[in-house]
Length: 254
Image (tube, rainbow, N blue to C red; front, side):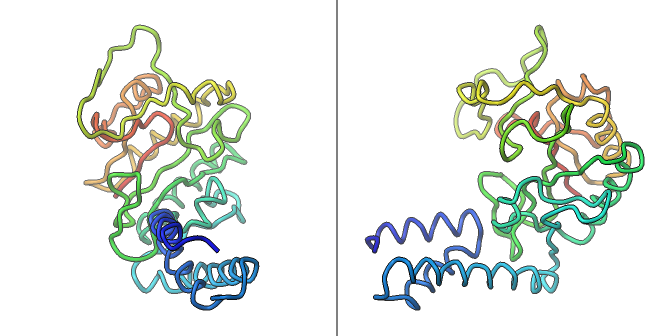
């Protein structure tokens, strides 16, 4: 078996990524103690499955509900990748879930077959930070994948495939010093396929969000994408230079 320090690191990582995974790993250590790795991992998988299913049942009592893992009905928003669903990162408040349903119906009506794909939302319980985000702790924030020509995502999980500003566009942040999550990840960009942004569908979604997001809500998108898509609106904001780039996804909060 792994050494105690390795188990501690795994427990911390699983807690940070999934909220419930650390507790499951800790419980499996006691239940399968002395029975070998295979039994331990089997117990851990069974416990995680039970905890994962239980969270989906219990979370509504705490004011959260899970976005569906897979699209069952046309226009129904769902997780962009199984990771977000399995890691308990797609929980939102009922109000935000209804807001996304409205966007899904609009996109399906205007562009039949269009899928609203949810990236990170929040955890099922409590106001726990959803790292690496600076927010997403209260279930009232969610990230949506951009739409691309030909469908699908540019990166495996929807994040970090940035839409670069056009040549000559003004530099917004320059060299940001100190603590910042604004990663350009230039070394990673050549790995993603060349898939053009679907400006019609992305622009339509952004326009709907700008016009229908409740008063006080915000939609974060990089300024160069706003200019490109022509959706200037008071609800659409720039997230600032210390937060992550928002030209690989759309951040919605109510």
